[in-house]
Image (cartoon, rainbow, N blue to C red; front, side):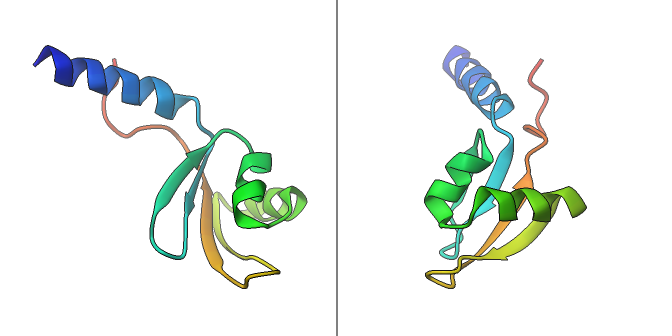
Length: 83
C-alpha cells in the first residue's frame, strides 16, 4: 500500500510540472513542459502551436513535413486527488 501511495505522489508531482498533452498518430500520449519540446517531437513550429492554442485549449495540428496529424492541448494537471 505504501508503494502505491508513493507512486501516486511521484505521478502527481511529475504531471503537475507539465503544461501540454499530445496524442500522436499511433495513439500514444505524452506530456510536455513547453511548446518548444512539443515542436521538437512533432515538427510543428512553436509559433503555430501557440497561435492555435490561444484560440482553443486543444486542437488538431498537421505536421508540414510528414503530414501526420496530432491532437495537442493545454494540460490542466491530473484529475485524481493528489493531496
